[in-house]
Length: 351
Ligand SMILES: Nc1ncnc2c1ncn2[C@@H]1O[C@H](COP(=O)(O)OP(=O)(O)OP(=O)(O)O)[C@@H](O)[C@H]1O
Ligand SMILES: [Mg+2]
Image (cartoon, rainbow, N blue to C red):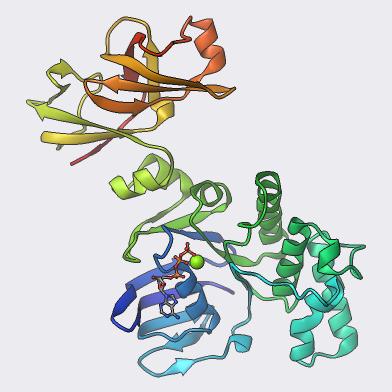
């Protein structure tokens, strides 16, 4: 069992409070992502969990074992926590072969050599590095080195894997490939994964559930990627999970308007007065004429599959992503200065 229970933990450095009264549960076998802006305390939380940093307050358990408790002073050393870690600034030792790198934690733990050799081989096979056992890191690609770090984290067969931005140093294609491989490891080994990143695309793609932290290290929302994306708890969550537009509108008597023009969507119940409407570029529906908000194209950028039109809507700025095939089919290739009409497929209302 590798359920993680984090109860009311706090951590400060001097007078700088990084984490305050944070509680979170990660279920056994799930891939859980912690996402949040740079400096919000993600690495600090992982370091506390791994046992490299102490708690000021609160308690943390892995499975049925309390690994850290500020009140009782419990703090299990890292090697007794049954977890594997790949940190942000992961390092594979350049002078050791793949086999030596992966086997290092077992050597330190003085495991029986024959048993260790079998575990090392299994771990190398699990991350698809079979055949590269005797290579040095300098003879491996960035993605392969990343796998060495993963294999080393997995070699002692932990029930919990902590990954801190492990794909940062990879190019986009490799990042995508490794994303799939991490999911495969989760499935094949049944390991619980706590994954930390500030990259919303990776978080949405890889998580069973995720938690979004704000700059103050407070949790804004916990849920599945679909829940956070389609039902954001607040404007911060909405803005963090992809490119976003906002229009300031007036709601009066159950109707919304923008600078006196009728707004194309009905206001969400409970909103009145000045309200902000948030929507994604892909939520915008453009046409040359008809009902909707009048807009003018300020800039048109052809991006292949999509065209990014930046619009002026009553003095407010809106970005769109119009499907190029659809634009061609509907005679909607617009130029700078062209007038058009904007409607919305979907929006979120924020007071
Ligand atoms: N040992 C330390 N002493 C003092 N301050 C620290 C220490 N470790 C971290 N901090 C501070 O705690 C805050 C949170 O740092 P942390 O490394 O957890 O951020 P992060 O969310 O991982 O950011 P990033 O996405 O950039 O990796 C930062 O302001 C950082 O400067
Ligand atoms: Mg970090």
